[in-house]
Length: 152
Image (cartoon, rainbow, N blue to C red; front, top):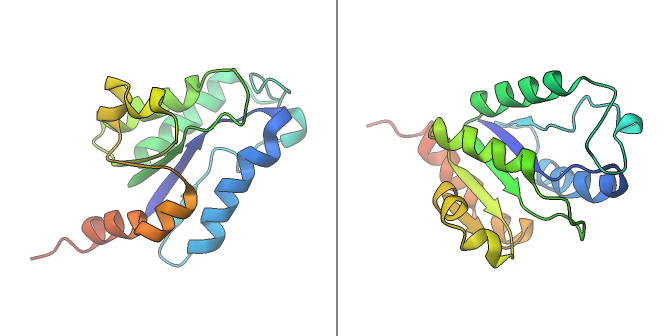
């Protein structure tokens, strides 16, 4: 199962942007999972503090992430901006790409502005408050079982 890890990326919050992704990957491992992480392979030292530039051309970043989203079986979208005011523009684009391809989305957020927004509420297959809650509720396993074992 291929899982894309969508979420905020900003140089000043790079540790926070990576930590939740690492937590999920460590918990589930690679057995039966391929993790499509937009932070994999990026030159962390060149991601600007505001997260809007890197050493890679903008078009290359967008096209690579577009292909990754389209090849995923499931999207996990963490809507946390870690106290920053910059909007989740890239993440919301990724959610729209996934929605267009009928790829299920687990949205992690405690923010009502995301939970109650008509578009995001519709995009999300399952909305959960935290990574721990997602793990405890077996959300990934739910989708994995339905995608890989829907044989009659």
